[in-house]
Length: 225
Figure: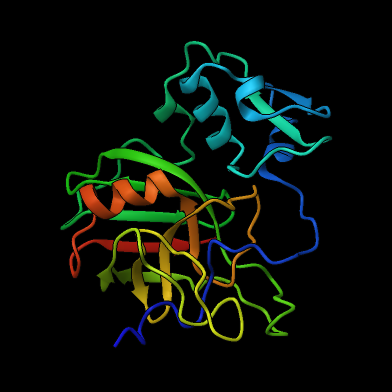
């Protein structure tokens, strides 16, 4: 009955991949950011006790995983006053659309939500498909192109394939846009592309998109590198 649930992708489960350069490391050459390296015992709450600032730093670094010693973190120099939308890699305004639009930029590891007037209303981090998945012995990059959301499920959405051989990995608030490819929440957005092909995002972002923004059959998903 639920054969359609994510049979080729992704998931909140993170299998071992070769360590890639994180998005935060790439920001360290940008004069708008300061960078630090975490020490033993550091965690998100300890380093950034203010909830607003903590979420900004996590999203700027495209990362919601637990910190380990030696992790490089980029911090906006104007963190105390910065407007979150101003940190988006997407333009604030595009040409008016016939419907709502979600842009997924696999290079900048980000999604952006535009209303029908072309106004950017929200954005956040993503982790797309990795170049090679050892468990299936092939590349598993996220498909690119323009699609529409075909179906969506709530917090209980799970994969029917991964982890091999029986599936069961959580894909909360999944929104399928092409076959088994989906946008979905995950606790393993690591700052680089690491999935089996789906588009991982912070679970709170997936919930917002699923419940407050996406309309099945209408909302467009544009995936690019």
